[in-house]
Length: 84
Image 1 (tube, one colour):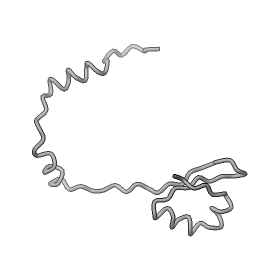
Image 2 (tube, one colour):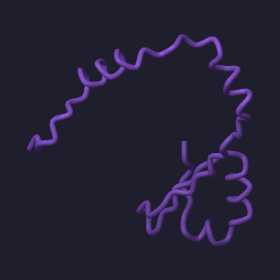
Image 3 (cartoon, helix red, strand yellow):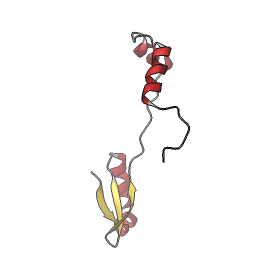
Image 4 (cartoon, one colour):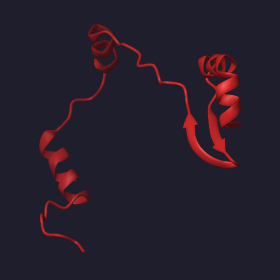
């Protein structure tokens, strides 16, 4: 859950807030009691080597592409006309 901080706290305690972001904390910045922004930590992308990805899917069943297309067509209309 995000912690509310004032604009003044953001300015005066930026080091503490940055350390909180490093720990995964989120903050909602307020000005005169009104929320104006949100600070959240960046989500780090994990790199997965190709060999590891192939190993994970090696035992997966094969995909019947014709059946997949039929299933998709059944769920999502291919009609280009507007619905509104």
